[in-house]
Length: 252
Image 1 (cartoon, rainbow, N blue to C red):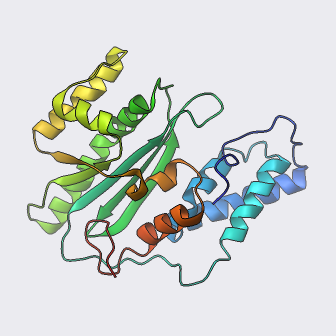
Image 2 (tube, rainbow, N blue to C red):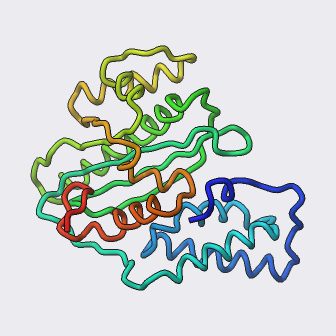
């Protein structure tokens, strides 16, 4: 939506907005946050970052907000479609962007599909500094594991039937190797704990994890600003997957 260098970058030279413009900025961001949670998951990446800027917004932040508003003027056929298939299988895409913030911390993103419909999109700045992309991906995967299992339990309770094992897609082969065979070297105890937590869950067949190429990683749109064909792909998946979709993969 914004250029890849723009969104998370903060300029120390940008002036603080006057009080009146600051209130306007805050009000618009709050309204767009509500919109992103209800009808426009495609803007959630940008608006989540702008939410962290409402206390002391700068002119640079206002420019980012204006760019976001411009993106909302795209064709009206880009609407959220909730049309589930007969299958209630839970399919999850989990991704991370390494050291994308000024303080060296990484960014996490997750998209959960139920019956081929994107029912949940979330992103957040990681609380710890990762040493590599593999560590950043492992942190994201382990942090979301319990949450994914709650979705599985909820669908089982609602349908009163046993459903298929949750499928998790990852685009990092190193992480997949670590959590399926226990291989690899971790630099700290908390990283080893994360690895074995996921490994135990997969061995118990509570989830299964598959590799997907980065070009097909839907959660990629939640971990960094993207544009062009990558952004169109993300939007089509999270907003129009009700069209004869299966497990988060659309067919027309």
